[in-house]
Length: 307
Image (cartoon, rainbow, N blue to C red):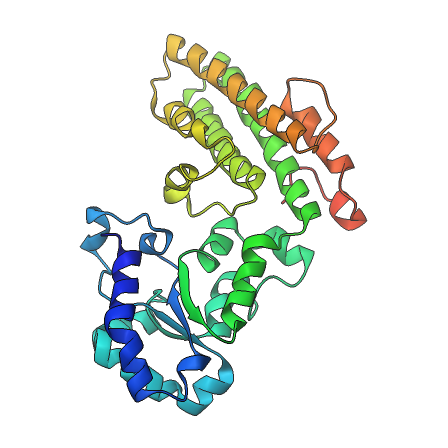
């Protein structure tokens, strides 16, 4: 059973009744679920995941007023269910489990007490941080305070910011994969060629998430998360091939072909979303075309690779 399911079962079988019995006046002021840092919050955990930082529990999020009135008591009730060591580690290690103030939870990821408030924040808060701030599940949130910020993070990225990020990924994919990979090999720089492939794969992964209007998780979960994506998620195996296949003469030629096929698929999706008017098969031209579709003058004036 995945940890998310175990955590929900713990809450529904024991936690909900305990909170109702011991904290009836506060149960409606709590948001309950599991979200934040850790593979279990994405539903990516497996047997290997349980070799460290693994203990039962779930998340309780409360606002500042509830924390002031009853935070200590809520934490005590939580510890009685999940154990004191779990609660202590949750607080000290910024783990997902435990009792958290809503503002503290979000500030770890966005730098604010909630969702990003400006286009600059949306642009420069790391994608994996936004992914962790909005992953997992929420099982109860009567007030809706926690879920309101969560839903903004999930769905509220300004379209001009998304376009700017897509433009940046497109130009990096073009330079690293379509241009520099083979040139590095011709220079005899095999290490540089490997770095070019890695840069291409990283940019392509991010591009695919952006085209799906999703936040890419931390790099070690990027491929796993791609399995859930509707658009271009089937490129996961090809991206893994680029990183893991041999880079001899034959392998390099195959990789170059895979890169071109992937760029063509990305360009086709960009056109389906009306992001580009360029007609070339080289992604750099499409990056500048996307820039022309950005309405916000400040965002449009940023360097094409920024974002």
